Image (tube, rainbow, N blue to C red; front, side, top):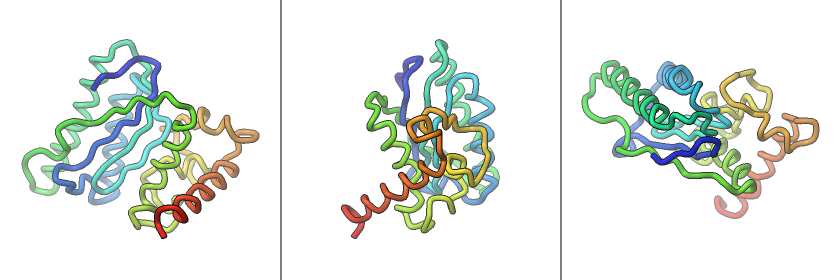
Length: 184
């Protein structure tokens, strides 16, 4: 992964052969706990969504020590995989070989990416409404949960009075627009 300090990235990976990497709520929470513990001093999480067989994070790199950030991220994946493999009596790789980190430079794409990340569970048919998926930052952005992992200020500042209600409505409008174009 080639990363630069101060830049935003869409960070994602999936299970090998598209296998599930999260099977119950404890798995999701353990992954987030490891992610935060090992990476909190190296990056800011802007938005995230964990799906049964993959994950998405929008991050901002906040360290000059990029080698250590990559090392810690690799450790998160490998240590999580060890616990997962023990728990489910499996062996071998859990994640695809390389995680992707796509540089996000365009401000329009930045907001679109946040919406895309949060819409994953709806598009996949796991829930009807984004707020019903417990493993994404959407619930934090809209006031359904008061989590501290995502740094929402960067997104909410673009809405009147940093309004979570405005963000929620914008997200719903985007879903309707995408459904009309692509889903129906």
